[in-house]
Image (cartoon, rainbow, N blue to C red; front, side, top):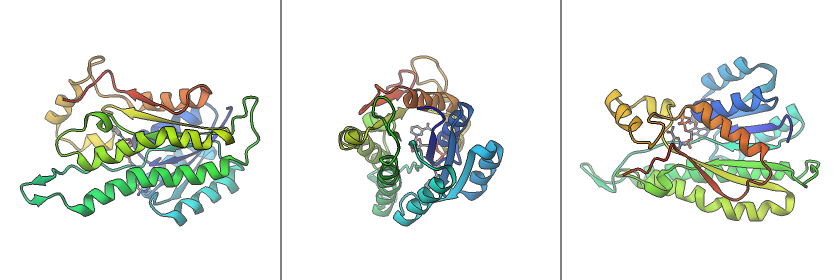
Length: 251
Ligand SMILES: NC(=O)c1ccc[n+]([C@@H]2O[C@H](COP(=O)([O-])OP(=O)(O)OC[C@H]3O[C@@H](n4cnc5c(N)ncnc54)[C@H](O)[C@@H]3O)[C@@H](O)[C@H]2O)c1
């Protein structure tokens, strides 16, 4: 897949922004789908002609459809979708203030899981019209899960459930889309230095950075971007989840 056109949800920040930079630096073009117009417009301006920003709420059908159609009209096709839009809500099942707010649980599922499915289904609908390559390949969808899907910690029932859902839908979605020549993969990151983690106190960040087996540091977003490029370039990767975590197993 050469010079692909990618829809990147959550593309204004963190791992999504790193994916956009990686795809553009290897000759691709990107449409950044994010609800943060300030960061999204700034990154699109930095990346130049190869990038556009579309203010988008991944949980909203019409919003994603409009962004997809606009991306199609600008770049002519969509080859890749990278799902990075997400939120991390920390709340115990029963905490000091009582039961976990149900609305917070539902919002986590809605953005992290339903939002990923929404972008994937609409991107795949467009990809099926692409001319196939020699393998019959027409597109690639890359979801972002988390190691919390496997080793969720205290205060993470909502986040871990949403990411477990992402892991769970990876294989059936790959099976659904195989006839169209569309691959589906997920990356399960460990701990990466993005705005999501940068908000934690220094002591918490140091404690987290000591957790991986090796290297003993937080992941660099560029390492996530490199994995996205590897998945795009590797036709035999399909239907599975890659842990990108320095060997971390959260206690
Ligand atoms: N940073 C980590 O250590 C880490 C680890 C494991 C998994 N992840 C996952 O990676 C993904 C990216 O995380 P990040 O660290 O880059 O976070 P981030 O906060 O830097 O970026 C997330 C982006 O998603 C956007 N977003 C949130 N809700 C949205 C919505 N409804 N519609 C459109 N955009 C929306 C935000 O505006 C933001 O730009 C998330 O799914 C996160 O759960 C991150």
